[in-house]
Length: 83
Image (cartoon, rainbow, N blue to C red; front, side):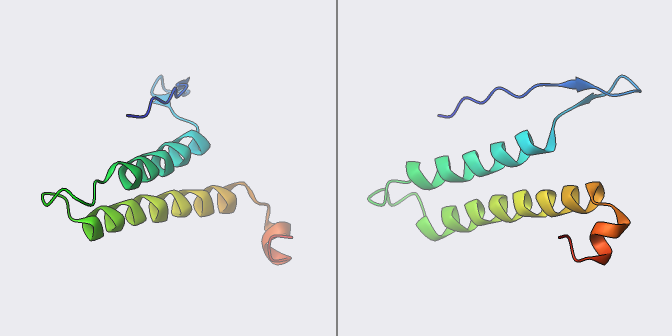
């Protein structure tokens, strides 16, 4: 089992926020944990399903990273192709 500490940052409206890099790290850590914990000898576990679910978490983490990069880049960065 993984243990991850995630800081909460209070938003202007009082709603707690989680830094995106911590969310993506958590998603990737869960994916790795699932993949590493699968016992191929256990007939109750379908390795392909676990791998697919882990892949979905990785894709979600990648998507969040891309959205954050787009959000924080300037119009000039986007015009230059993110250089």
